[in-house]
Amino acid sequence: MSRDLTWAATSVPEIRGRWCNALDAMADGQAEMIASPPEGGAAAGVAKRIERMQEKATAALEVMRSEAAALRGAELYWVARSMVDAAVRSQLRCHTAMP
Image (tube, rainbow, N blue to C red; front, side, top):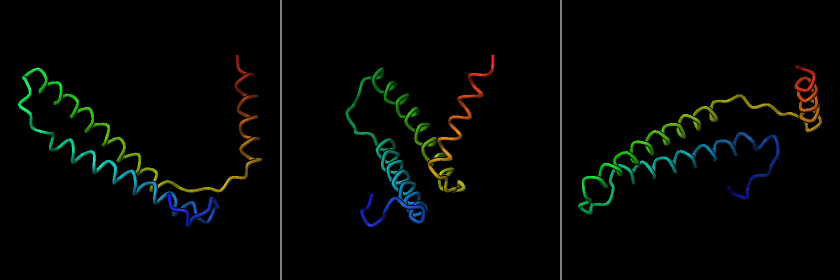
């Protein structure tokens, strides 16, 4: 994260955008590595294991991309710390009051 931004309400949209861009770049880089694994003439069993790992990694990257897209499009709200504490206390009271 660049040091030209501060943790202030006005910086949150820009920080979020940078996080999403970093996630996208990481996913793209990993996808490129998966698409072109190193050649080595692996035995059939090892090649099958590598293929399964590639499938799992591809699925994980899709989840990462969808989460970044959801984060990018999410509504942003500014909540004061005291309101967070009040919400947590309320939730705890409700949770302990229920049988």
